[in-house]
Image 1: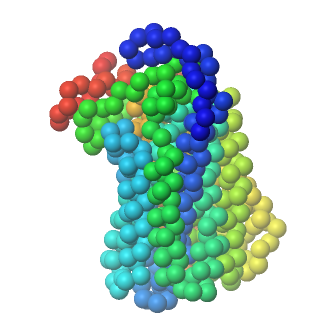
Image 2: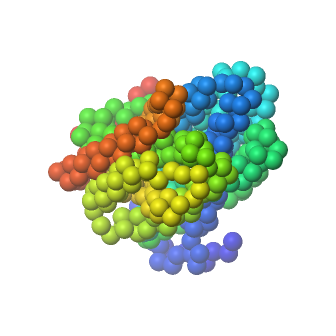
Image 3: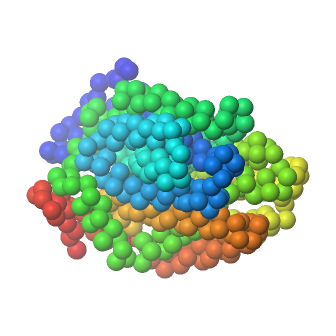
Amino acid sequence: MAVRPLVGVIVGPQTRLVKRPARLHPAWIVAAVAFVALVGAAGFRATPSVLLHPLHAEFRWPLATISAAVSVNLLLYGLTAPFAAALMDRFGIRRVVAAALALVAAGSGLTVFMTASWQLVLCWGVLVGLGTGSMALAFVATVTGRWFVHRRGLVTGVLTAGGAAGQLVFLPLLAILVSRYGWRAAALVVAGAALLVVPLVLRWLREYPADLGLPPYGATEVVTPVRPAGGAAARAVGALAQAARTRPFWLLAAGFAICGATTNGLVGTHFIPAAHDHGMAQTTAAGLLALVGLFDIVGTVASGWLTDRYDPRLLLGAYYALRGGSLLVLPGLFAATTEPSMLVFIIFYGLDWVATVPPTVALCREYFGASAAVVFGWVFAAHQLGAAVAATGAGLVRDQLGTYTLAWYVAGTLSVGAAVLSLMLLRRRGTAFTEPVPVAAGPKAWSYRG
């Protein structure tokens, strides 16, 4: 790509003042490649929801057992995020994402040979969970934090929408593959798709704008990144230990746990089986979730735009409150056919699906500064912990009561509680702790001043 030469003045060992930026900033290319990787990773994670009934029919495993594999996937998807963010700082984005795609391909491909439920937990739970967790929303926070100063909220919204929409838009294709060729065909397609993304990542996913002699998009200074000298695990745990001493971290983590429970854990995993219980065809239900993904693009991009302009605390409160109200009315909307009332829910829920991410990332950046990506990884881990609990809990509710109704009501009530938690953040603004500083490599390679 042709880049116009930069005219700069050396102002210190770390920075250069840039007067003429490139015509097309490479940040947009990096964002585009990240978008493809996120869409793919989300599509890979969509497969278990269309496998619930086929696996139950073939192996006679209880839905709660199959849901447990999904829960392990969701839990590791979240717990991997903070460590993946630290690994990206230590070894680079390209290496981490390429390795993650290889894990996804292995986990998905090996499922065609399984004969026991523990193998499902190992493949879809552990391998795919670790792989997709390395391309989770902490990856979004890392990319936007490194490459963008202006439009951070908007780009965060676009990348987040791509991830969430990818999971849902792939559902109809996967459902068709399962219905026509069996669940093994869908698993193999996912494995092949993961491998196809690897060359794109290795070729175009750049690490830092400074590597190209450029400032981040919207900045005027080239800042040489200071890579941490210590281990990624030590940095991730150290960031958690420091953040856990602050009130904003727990309010954000608790709200995001409820967010995960009411999206990936409940709706993402159990909407199709719940609709099937009311006589709706699985492909039709998958199509409705795909519509959620389409409207999610609009809602999350709009949320990013709003986050650049309004207090993210107020936005979170509104998003959670509206989500709670929609879930409380959902049990009365299920039917064998797609009624207009269900379409209204799908559109509304799609707009709100992960609109919570841009304001949450913005608040992590406000409260935790340079550690924002890693701390957001832990907040996202709480999101997936909530999702894992909801995925298993809803499966147990369905097995014991024969219906998902109680699960929808509990989720709606919790969402209203998350709105209250978000508004409690209004009492505390600004940095929650001082920036981490790198020290000599060793067991305690990161410390905090203050």
